[in-house]
Amino acid sequence: MPSTRLASTRWLFAAIILCTGFPGIRSADATVATDSEMRTAHSWADAPATPPLTFIPLTPYSRDNTEWIAWQFHDPEVNQGTVQAFRRETCDESTATVKLAGLDPDAQYEITPIDGAGTTTHSGRDLLDAGLTVSVPDRPGAAVLTYRRVIAWPGLQESLQTITDQELMDYVAHLADDAMQGRAMNTPGGRAAGDFLAAEFKSLGLRPAAPHDCYVQDCGQGCRNILGLLPGSDPTLVEETVLVCAHYDHVGVRQVRGSDTAVVFNGANDNASGVAAVLELAEALAGLPKPPRRPILFALWDGEERGFVGSRFFIDHPTVALDRITGVVNLDMIGRVVDNQLIIWGTGTAKPWRDIVTASNAGPQLDIDMRPFTLALSDHKPFVDRGIPAILACSGSFPELHRPTDDVELLNPDGMRRSTQLVQGIVCELANRRDRLAFLEAARTDIECDPQRTADDRRPAPRAAPR
Ligand SMILES: [Zn+2]
Image (cartoon, rainbow, N blue to C red; front, side, top):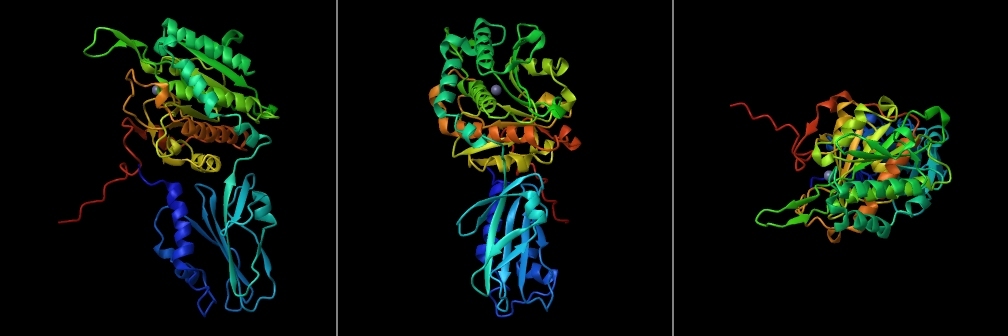
């Protein structure tokens, strides 16, 4: 897997702090006169082109400035950075207040000193308006703090704990049992799976979200979507639905090459894993003391394996205001997390995705490979075609894909739980943020059909040197 933006951001912060050792600060001449001198002193000019950190001087510099100097490195795409403040030899005050810049006033930020002692949480508005108080006991001396945006909502941390390895695996084991006959569309096994899921939505307290007050949307050809809604708590946002979805169908019972007998393709990872996650998310979000502001539609598609039959039907026959959807999170194959890695495709469909995914990863601590383009191989694709911001969470390809050996024993419960908790944060943020996501038109054509293609592979090749 390629290096992630997130990892390289952390690396860069560490490199700035550890490798440069505050050049210019610990040197004898600590006076930094101009912005350009400051940049040079911190090897800013040599910093890699990505990530595009914004350098923000927080105090005016002049040769007369004998008190504090402070500055900030901010990564606007993932909404995190560092604040560095320096107390001069001549300064009598051991604390100073610095107003930060570039933050989201509506967001919450966690601030941690670089030595790791004592994380505190602040609102973005406070950090912008009232500022952050930093303390440096020694003179001359420096304080370094990192900040990152966190997802906050009453009861969110407790609700994350209701997502458990055991419950996820119980759902997968049930759906991927031979009794479900591989859940193919328009088969007894597929219908049994759909009936089970509709009953689960009901018992979790979701409202029926298909026509005629039903959980089942009949799409014709024996295709049945299962739809349940958690109403939002803000009456001004009733149309701005958040959509979290997964396909529940698989390929059924088939003959394998070289054998006369038909075998059940259980589809544990593809996609009982994503369905189990949606059920656990429904339980966790429905259990919040106060529902998130926007409504959340939980959709389990049928007929994905037959060419997105269910999701395409929904787009032609939506049961919510389609063009007001805030964002789509599709889960397809999240059960085979290896080395803690999860791939998120489609972060280029709206600008805030990177920030939202990064902030949601504070607890799960997955190694996330964010790919800006859309992978054309699952149910989020028809939404991107309609100009709706959509991401796909997936643990990647695996040897048993579409083989009868895609069984529950091969799943990684810990990785699945972390991935589900990540999506819980993403969905909560989509439901509560001030503005819904705006689709980036360039994403409409930024489509990839090869799951192996990484963001690095797709960078334009360097131009050949002239002969
Ligand atoms: Zn699938």
